[in-house]
Image (cartoon, rainbow, N blue to C red; front, side, top):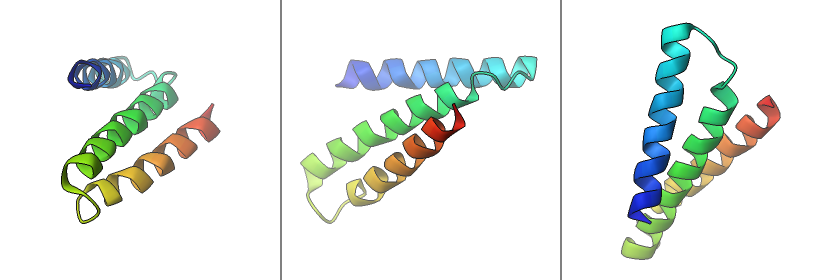
Length: 74
């Protein structure tokens, strides 16, 4: 799980940096989708480690919102 989080973070940073440098917003929805997946993984880990009263209860709905918005952007 740790490797997946690191890879997702690096890909999101790379796509976002490319978009900022070239002012090309073509890959914005892909970056948002990957960011939503990244937030969902963090939320699931928090929920497993600390239970109901953790940041996982905040991260999971936020990640679902980001994923839905990214899917409507395609």
